[in-house]
Length: 131
Image (cartoon, rainbow, N blue to C red):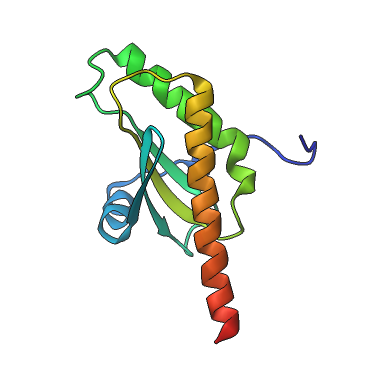
């Protein structure tokens, strides 16, 4: 790992606020990767990538299990967020299965999401340079 990369998850990187979440859900594009579903929206107004993590109470009645899965998703994001391009995204990640997966499975799912978003942002930037 690079020593220059700071693996932090600060307050600014957390997506919060009713209007921001409504904008994401209204304008966002959706996808799935492994055990996660995601909704994303390119937000040039924000200063960094922001995420919101959700684990439905419908699948896991106990808060302890929901919190465990949210911690695993946030940790995976924290360690891999540097792989995402310079564009700024708002992202909602929702855990979508009834089984509690190991950290490695969640890590791979987050990696797939970051890879898909990187491809989308590189395609958009290439389209702008061609025109």
